[in-house]
Amino acid sequence: MKAWMVTTPGPVDGAPVVLRTAPEPRPAAGELSVRVLACGVCRTDLHVVEGDLPVHRDHVVPGHEVVAEVVSPAGDFVVGQRVGIPWLRHTCGVCRYCRRGAENLCPESRYTGWDFDGGYAEYAVVPAAYALPLPDGYTDVDVAPLLCAGIIGYHALQRAELPDGGVLGIYGFGGSAHITAQVAIHRGARVHVMTRDAASRQLALDLGAASAQGAADPPPEPLDAAILFAPVGDLVLPALEALDAGGTLAVAGIHMSDVPPLNYQRHLFRERQLRSVTSNTRAAAREFLAFAAQHPLHLTTHPYSLDTADRALRDLKFGRFSGAAVLVT
Ligand SMILES: [Zn+2]
Ligand SMILES: [Zn+2]
Image (cartoon, rainbow, N blue to C red; front, top):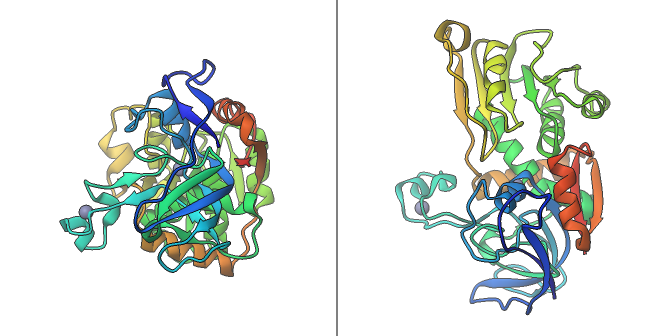
């Protein structure tokens, strides 16, 4: 089969990831074997390919928004069923985090496309316990970004503790943000978007945002909650300043440039909170996919053939599209 492998992590304008021919992976006990139909291109893939996140597996195949068809079944899944392979791939089940329902914090957690081969390939395997049934009503390409961008955004929204009918600020408007904004709007929130890219500002307004302005501009009203999706530590400051008293800023990225020094009065006093978001639990993933089945989400996707994954990664890095890139096999 064809598979992209991270050979020499480094800038994506070099050749850190190469297309090779490899044997089809064989499922271990309890694993599904699947044929990949589509795979989303997530910013985390870029961090793995460029070495911001050191690879955990030599020649790892990136990709953790994998839409696939079951070839050899396991667990409750049947042959031909459409399944998703997400980022979270393994947890220990017995540590204090796992036992209290916070498996996203498990120190033994392992991830698709980082610790194990992912979906930039024609075939893949996944433990049945971590595969996700997918909602109907979405094409293979459109459902792919739900698997990380959607799930992580949903968890970020939980971490931001947006009150019912509240005001949400979104900083950065890529794949995850454009889904999360719609979830918040479905729940009655008023959403303000801050992003540097004019096309993304227009997309935000088209999807129902109340306003859209520059990346660090103040929103037109104080925010009850905010999510920072852009991996830019400098933006933590204006985002905290934009919060109303008691508001919460959740930082959704796995990797971010340094956060500048905070001024207590300007950025934190009056019980404003700054929180990170780490992966997600399987429960949050299933809750989000059930939400997506009930509430139609409009995906802005850009299909690339599997052979052009390197171009998709470069286009993501240099902001050449709004929404989400998806590889089609
Ligand atoms: Zn654990
Ligand atoms: Zn991701």
